[in-house]
Length: 118
Image (tube, helix red, strand yellow):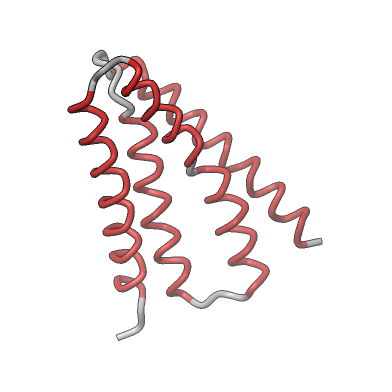
């Protein structure tokens, strides 16, 4: 039963990612991967908060692994990094790497510590 929840959650997350990407792409003219960055940042923030809340195991797995796993995308991030390197856009590559990894970690920490009971 948990696998069904994860699968359905992943479908919801992937549809959310697709919708946001399709909306943002026309607004970024320089080819910088803004949509993936924002999606991964938001997913990191939500997963950090989800981790701190302490919901039941089924809900954490369904939302964390399913929805947020389908929403965020390491494979697209990796592909975009390779494309920036292939285009020799090294400044964009380095900034995307630092913002993605550093921002994702910072937002996960913010989500986690922001949701802890005081």
